[in-house]
Length: 278
Ligand SMILES: Cc1cc2nc3c(=O)[nH]c(=O)nc-3n(C[C@H](O)[C@H](O)[C@H](O)COP(=O)(O)OP(=O)(O)OC[C@H]3O[C@@H](n4cnc5c(N)ncnc54)[C@H](O)[C@@H]3O)c2cc1C
Image 1 (cartoon, rainbow, N blue to C red):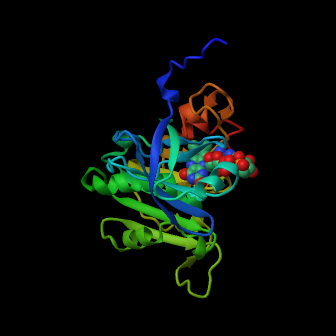
Image 2: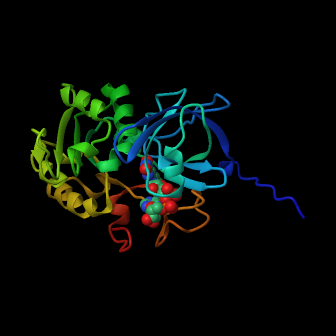
Image 3: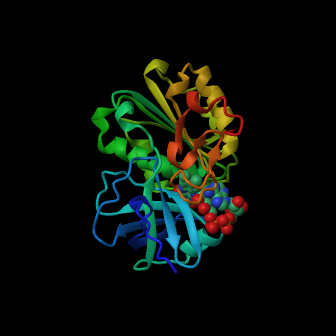
């Protein structure tokens, strides 16, 4: 049989070691990972990698640490099926394969010098944590930073310690809400859109970065447009089932766009007329 030679290096599988695996909630685990050859992942905030488990499969997962963290990178993974449940069973010292980073993330060089309104729903905090950490590590390069976070219930809150830390910083405006409170919850109750009207922004110099469950997008976009933020300054990250991660297989195609290659981060102006996008 003829030997198949893959010439495209972007498909190359790299060996990686789990340094730390930690439970965040009943459904999500945090993983700190290092490439076995000692190299740096070199991702942009908002990009994703393909995680590969031999004999099980591959899954796209957003990198949730900042590129300023050089020796290792972080992932936050919700156990939903075959690959992600198998990942949850792994521990420090175990090996996995990764491909990437892939896709277009948040355009940090365009965001620099502007104000940011970061809107994270549930697991959407994972890719946005990469952007937030990057901004905090380069704080003087950015104007005002607002972080809005929402989840269904307090027990689903990811990165609780970091959210607590951000809420105390004087160089950030942070607000958080839950859909349903528990007896210990003393904060806001309501969906994330209820936080947007109260945010004091200058729309012309504000970029919004939004990641959350699909149901959130239409409502959040409506509120951001009401605030006067221009369409091209509303940045949204999309999740689609994908296989190659490299614009070849077409699984993640939305009309003429490939989420894996043209996204996952798009500006609203780019995708507002694509009926399949929302
Ligand atoms: C760009 C991108 C970034 C992502 N980042 C993260 C992340 O940071 N953390 C995280 O936990 N998850 C993330 N996901 C979702 C993750 O890829 C899927 O949950 C995972 O591939 C499911 O694989 P599985 O084998 O565990 O589940 P399967 O056994 O394949 O399926 C279980 C269920 O999940 C659904 N599903 C499968 N693939 C996807 C998908 N890509 N998106 C949504 N639902 C899916 C299936 O339809 C099925 O209902 C991301 C997805 C994309 C496209």
